[in-house]
Length: 168
Image (tube, rainbow, N blue to C red; front, top):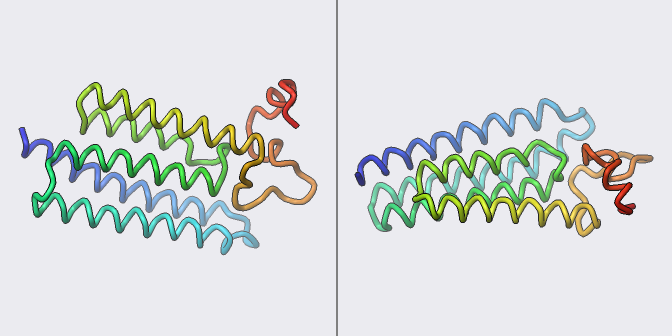
C-alpha cells in the first residue's frame, strides 16, 4: 500500500511540473509584446517556487523522513497556496482559477475521503476570498487593466451581474 502511495506522489510531482511548464508557456505566448516582461517575472517566480517544492517533495519521498499521508497533505496544501498566489497576481478572471479543480482531483488520488473534502473546502474558501478581495479592490492583479478599462469589466467575465448587485 505504501509503495502505491509513493508512486502516486511521484505521478503528482510529474503532473505538477508538466502543468507548470504549460502554464508558463501560455502566459508568455498569450501576453501582448509590451507586457511580456511584466508577466515573465511573476510567472517565472512562481515556476521556480513550484520546481523547488517538487525537488523538496522528491527528496523527502526518497529519504522517507516523513510519513506518506502527511507528505501528501502538505503537497495539496502547497498547491492551494501556489494557485492562490497565481490568482492573486493575475486575477480571478484569469487562467489560474481552474487549477483548484486539479488540486481537488489530486487530493482524491492522494488523500483519504475526509481529507479530500477538507481540501475541496479549503480551495473553495481560498478562491472566494480572492474573488471578494479583487471585487472590493483589496488588490489589483498584474498586469493591471489597460487605461480606460475598469478592473471588473476587463477581468471578471460576469461583471454585469456584479454591477447589478451594486459593486462599482
